[in-house]
Image (tube, rainbow, N blue to C red):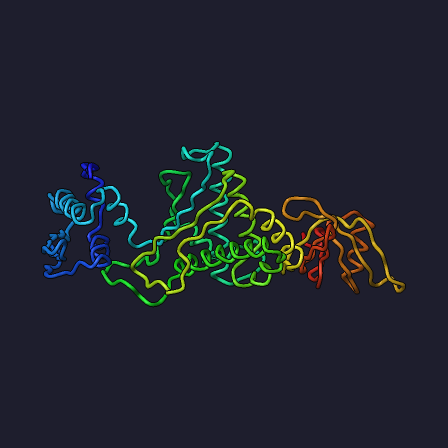
Length: 377
């Protein structure tokens, strides 16, 4: 145990309530408390009583020295370094998800700048996909992102780990927690997100094992509504593209502030062989899941009228995810007449519907709100 923290600013930043939660989670017991001044915590180590004097007022001149004393006592009891103990105290109110890219090429803990950018983007998209599923599970998530999911990814923090190329995502499970109550029963949104993420990753691993035994991708698609989305599949693929890892390990250090379900998944390792399965699952999910309320804007490039010339099929060239595609839609009545006018006059048309993909074809079902841009101005 040679690591010693001497930076007073670091020690002063340690919150008494975080230390208290940490102590309680490790079976220390508060024996005495003078509110706003100090608390005395005790436990037994090697059949001997051990005591910690925890300052409760960060304004004390010797607060940093007192916290250093707390860390020194914990170091002796736990046989761990100051740095590791302090890191656990600072994240005691967070579920910490460790994402570790493992492989011979990553033994030094470094990857290319481009690869690192892809990896971090993959981590962000992975957490966003899990947060969206915590709001409402769907096979595909499109804009707009649910407010709760966006707030979540703005709250979580990321840091670099040691050893192989690893990042740690710290998700606060109770932003309002200032007391030392641990094991709360009601799951916070952040905790639900972590649970869904780890369960989804476990399902992916199980689907890979089954596919190598002769089962098809249907194994994964059958459980997609429970949290597997095309977005999650794409994010996982980006992790492998960025890191070129042989496998990626996901593990969680659960915050003691919230009770962990007995069936929670805490550790999953997924080999690189899963990538083709993920790519195929993403493709199928996107092709078979309507994008409800999709706004299509573009030019009518072809019309196929029915015999009465008041309804027919329109082909509209417009942008989908930044790329130009031709989209088929069946229109009738005034909607078809507007499409006819847009085709004759080369005007921009806009309509809303449910976008589906079938192979290379895009179809806009249930078209509505058909307007021409010059009619809106």
